[in-house]
Image 1 (cartoon, rainbow, N blue to C red):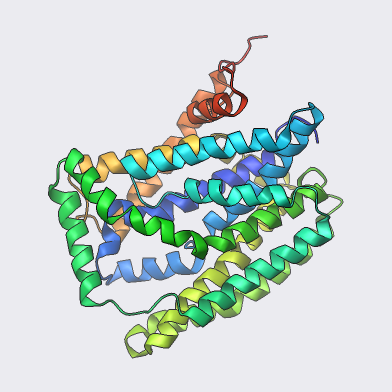
Image 2 (image 1 turned 90 degrees about the vertical axis):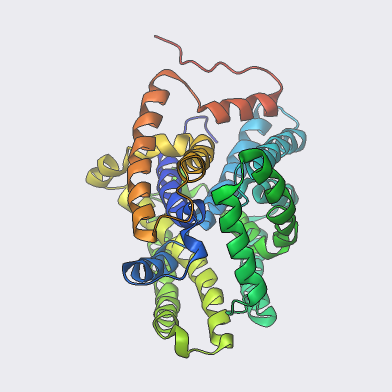
Length: 380
């Protein structure tokens, strides 16, 4: 496993960050606290079909793949790989906890850090074993959702009151008081959500499987497998997307049970479409025109941790400090997303011209290796 970066992975990561910003924007802006209508309703359907649950699953895949690359490189240097990866996860957990406490309860880093410890059990397993566990976990997760009816499909009076209380808190409380309110109302439920994130670990294992095969360094060798996977993931996605569209467009006429199955379908499409996106981009990057077109995304992807956290910080400033929370529609927040992301592309490019890592990546490396890393690029 060489030390050079795999540019395709940075590009996929950069693509996923755009999707993450899109899917998080309704929560950042508070537009998800209201019933959608008009153009917002159509945008919400598009989000559910092609964005919701599709991009954190891509990141989960990349996390599992990144785990394998990290372990192989550390192993080649004679490092204690288990101890080093544990330090890396603890540092990530700290980032996640600080992210949750001071800014937003939608953080995914703490979940990755906690579930990441279980990857250590699979590092030395065979590719066949990893693939079997991947399938068992992902299929089992969907069955789990179906059996337990995780989503009720109905909003009761208690939930309506909670939405109103959140709106009031973000629109009226000073920052110090908002932190206290969040600590009491938003943070506790996160602990109970971990068991419902087992699909993330399934995608970790899928990424680990791809890493063990070394697919992204040998795309030509695995081109047939990639094309076959692309086709299968697309065909599996189509029925779920059709059913989701039907349920969404007949929402008022559909029973509570079918409404709950809508969310099961959305999670299923998240798994299959994320694989379709990954394979499609990988195959497109084999063509010169697409490589040039998608190349700028690598800069965002190379600073994924920094850009992910900055998305929250930027949106927190826009919607909380400037008093816009709950006052922006979905289509307006979509425009804000389309403005923010190109700025991240540009600033990431400018930063990486001078520095080797993003600022948070730099801190992460220091916390992992226990020593200060050189940040500035060496001038030849």
